Image (cartoon, rainbow, N blue to C red; front, side, top):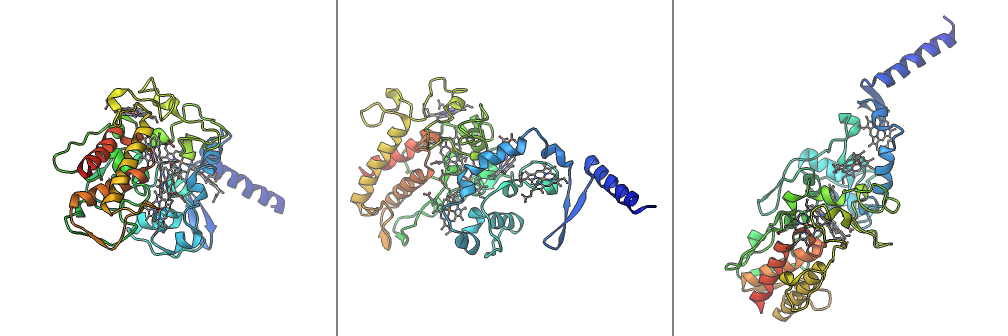
Length: 343
Ligand code: HEC
Ligand code: HEC
Ligand code: HEC
Ligand code: HEC
Ligand code: HEC
Ligand code: HEC
């Protein structure tokens, strides 16, 4: 056979393999990797991946600005702040930084399309929160592998030795508050739950990835941007809330008198921020919160466990950053009981 015929035959069989979509192996960094699936079912012309990419580029996950590359790869922060740390954690339950070529959270952190041939999530099993409660709300489980309170509220006792200005839930305790747990509940008060975890499909993903109109402001909100608000234009996804709350046209919409806690009828988020401010003033007066940076005061023993609990409630609500929306009733009850107790 002529050389060109052989080349042509090889080319045709390769093309055939690509089209039938059987398993292929490629060499990446000296190791053989299997790629499964019909490439074009995902890499097609329908723009499925392009839209996700466009959105992801506008996400905080992509920017990963909060922890520098050295930190992401070189400390325990890597479990949640890096792709490599998260994957190792999922596989072994541990992290062993530093990693080579450490990268931010991206497509392959949450999906493993070239291993599974699908876009299913890498992790969707329920998550045990620090206080032993189980978070199990569909695809929201993925998010709560990282977005949970890092403090076990059950460890609060009287005569608590408070040794760290970083005491508390740390950043991102959304999983706990959505589920209506993780706050410090003072004996004699009752704590309600607004129930967004069960009402909204896939909890976190149902709101943050909600996409009633897929192309919003150049992919700035919804979908894989995970953003609820476009910081530049102020446009939001409140159209998504209207499926259940016909009256919401802004997350801070004005509540009726039933939801008033300070004698002035304000928006839901403003109301929660007001309660947080009142609690801060009381915690500062107790000598447990720093008046300038609002951080817990360290190296003190706090005699009353409920004061310690109120300090924790302040931190967990502040770090949740939804200003009450995630679980309005639970969040308001945590703040109000803390304020009442200290008052
Ligand atoms: C189940 C969906 C899916 C299938 C099937 C799939 N891919 Fe991908 N692929 C992705 C996603 C998601 C990405 C990441 C987003 C992007 O870069 O577009 C990606 C990225 C890539 C990249 C860029 C690599 C990188 O590191 O960014 C290459 C090359 C690629 N795919 C090749 C293939 C080939 C070849 C096949 C068929 C054997 C295939 N893909 C099948 C979903 C898929
Ligand atoms: C691998 C861990 C991890 C997973 C999984 C994860 N996140 Fe995140 N998320 C982070 C980290 C870390 C940040 C902060 C990144 C930074 O600031 O550098 C963040 C930031 C965010 C932000 C932006 C907060 C801001 O400052 O504006 C939103 C919103 C968010 N995540 C929602 C989600 C949702 C919804 C899911 C599930 C679909 C999810 N995350 C899954 C770790 C994770
Ligand atoms: C269990 C997961 C997890 C670990 C471990 C973790 N973080 Fe985070 N971190 C998050 C999440 C989730 C966010 C985003 C929360 C949000 O925006 O509400 C975040 C946000 C941050 C932010 C931005 C806060 C802000 O106000 O914008 C900083 C800074 C940060 N982390 C530093 C660190 C450092 C430093 C470490 C290691 C000592 C670390 N984190 C370990 C999950 C984690
Ligand atoms: C933080 C985790 C996370 C990251 C990072 C992530 N995804 Fe996803 N992705 C999800 C979740 C959760 C869903 C399911 C959304 C739902 O069902 O509402 C999803 C769904 C999808 C879908 C199908 C649904 C749709 O209409 O978008 C595609 C396609 C996709 N992802 C591609 C990508 C690509 C490409 C990237 C990188 C640019 C990426 N994903 C990064 C979590 C993630
Ligand atoms: C009912 C819809 C809804 C659900 C469910 C939901 N969120 Fe939110 N989330 C919001 C809204 C609304 C805000 C506030 C946006 C604002 O006012 O800036 C927010 C704020 C946040 C922020 C802070 C973002 C910022 O820019 O400051 C993070 C991080 C976050 N949510 C993560 C999550 C995670 C993780 C889950 C699941 C455990 C979740 N959310 C579930 C609606 C929701
Ligand atoms: C799938 C339905 C659903 C969606 C979508 C939804 N919610 Fe809710 N929401 C509920 C339910 C159910 C309650 C509990 C009502 C109650 O306790 O009477 C609730 C309660 C609330 C409350 C507390 C109201 C009160 O009277 O105590 C606020 C505030 C709220 N949601 C805001 C939002 C915002 C903002 C969005 C969009 C980001 C949203 N919700 C999306 C179902 C939903």
